[in-house]
Length: 633
Image 1 (cartoon, rainbow, N blue to C red):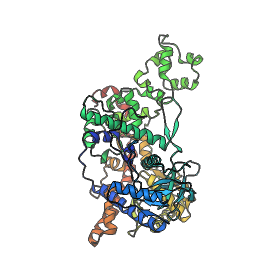
Image 2 (image 1 turned 90 degrees about the vertical axis):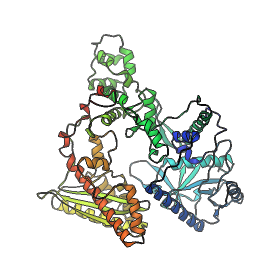
Image 3 (image 1 turned 180 degrees about the vertical axis):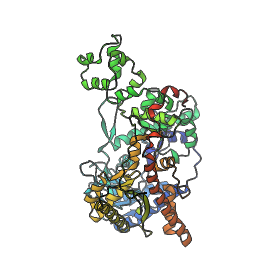
Image 4 (image 1 turned 120 degrees about the vertical axis):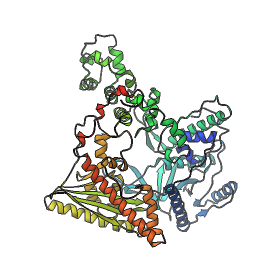
C-alpha cells in the first residue's frame, strides 16, 4: 500500500519493480553516469537483441494475422497499437500500451496475444531457458505451452515431462504489463495469464494469480502470494521510494526510504561504487555475507544487528536454540527471579512443547540459571523463522577472521568421497546449449595416480540436434568408462563443481534421446558427486566458495589468463564466427585449455581437502569477543 503522493513520479517501466530500490532512489536524486558495459555484458545484450529479432521474424511468418507495430514516436506507437487492438489482430508485435497516468506505469511488451473471450495477454521474449525437466516425486510449475502457429493460451497444452522455470524478473515484468492492460480495459476476463518465449522458441504460459511465492512473516505460518501480489507490493514501494527521493532533492529534511543492501544486481549497477563504500566501511554490512538476502538483512536490522562484527558476536548456542524453534524470550520470562539451580525439567508443567526442553538439555542448558545466561539479543530472533541464523553468525566470523577458510562447526575431519577410478566433468555452454564436455580421468588403483583429459566439442551452429549428438557421444563414453571400471572390480566416482547446470543439460540429453531413466539414476547415485556441496557442507569462507576461489587455496593455477565464464562466452563467439582462421584457432585452444583447467582444478581441490583437517582451523577456534572492531587478534 502506498504511503505517499506519487503524482509527481514519472511513469515507470516494468523493470523498476524488480530493480533495487536504492538504484531507483539514487536515479531520482542525481541520475548516475552510465557505466561502460563490460564486453561480456555487451555480448549478452547484443545476442539478446539478435535473438529477439529472429523470434519476431519467425512469429511474423508463423502466426496468422500477426501485426508488427512500427512508429517513430511514443505517441505514434501507442496509436498504431490501439488500431491493431481495435481490429482484433490475433498477435501484436512490438506494441506500446497507453501510459497509465494514475498507476504511473509505462511499457512496451514484446507481444500481445489475443484471448478467445476478448482482450490481450502479454508475452515477453527472453534469451534464456524457460523450461526444465520434471523431477519425479517433486512439485514444479506446470509447463503450459503453445506454439508460434497457434500462440493463444487457449491453444496451449501441458507437457508432463517438463516444468516451467519460475524466473522472478520475467514474472514481475509481465505483471507490470498485466496492470497496464487492465488500466486501458483490454485485459481478458478469464484470468491473468502471461507468456515467455525462451530459447526453446515456444510460448510458456504463467498464471499470474497462482500462489507460487512464499513469504515468511514473524511467527506466523508461511504464506503464499501470487505474482500480482508481489508485483503490486514491490512496484508501490518503489513509487514511494522515488516520491521520497524527489521530495528530498528539493528539501533535504525529507527522509529517504532506502539504504544500500548488497544484492545480485550490484555488480552491473552504475551506483555500485557509491553503495560499496558504505557497505564495506568498518566490519562491513551483513548483506555482504553469502546467502544473506534482503529478508535476512531486514530481520537483522530490526534487531540492531547492522554489521558483520555485531552479527559475529551473537551467541551461537542461543542461535541454535532459536533456530530450532525454542522460545527463549518466553523462557526468560518464565524463570526470571526463580532459583537458578532449579532443573529445566521443572518447566514441563508450563511448556507445552516438550521438544523445547529436550533441545535445551542437548545444548547443555540444565537449570534456570543456564536459561538466564542465554543471550537476549540473539534470543530476539525467536519467531523470525530464520533457521540459518547459526550459520550466518559463523559466516560473519569467517569473513572477519584471519584465515580464508575454516572447518565448519562440529567437523573434526574432512571427508572426501574417493574411488579407484575418478572422472572430473565440466561442461561449457552458451544460451543455445552445450558445445563442450570435458572429462579428466584419474586412475588411482595402480600405483601412482595418472590422469588424462578428453574433450567432446562441436564448433558447428548449435542446434538441438547438434548439441544432442555431441552430448550423447560424451555420455556413451562416460557410461562405458564406468562399466569398464566396475568390470575390473574398481570403484568409480565422477565429480563436478556445482553440478546444477550439468544436471540440467544431462537431463535434457536424456529426454531427447530416450535415456531419461539412465541419466536420472546416475545423477541420483553416490557415484555422482557435487564437490561444491562437499565443500559447503564442511567448510566456510565468509564469502564465495566458487571454483575460482577455492582452487587457488590448493595451489592450483589455470593455464589461461582471466579464466571465467563471461570471457569463455566471448571466446566461443570468436571460435565459431570469426572470419580469421588464426583467431578461430586461438579461441578454440583457449576454450579447451580453460575447460581442462576446470576439471584439473576439481581434482586439485579434492586432493587438497583429503587430510586437510590438520591444516584448516575450525570456526570454533575464533573468539567472538575479538570482533569488537571487526578484526581478530
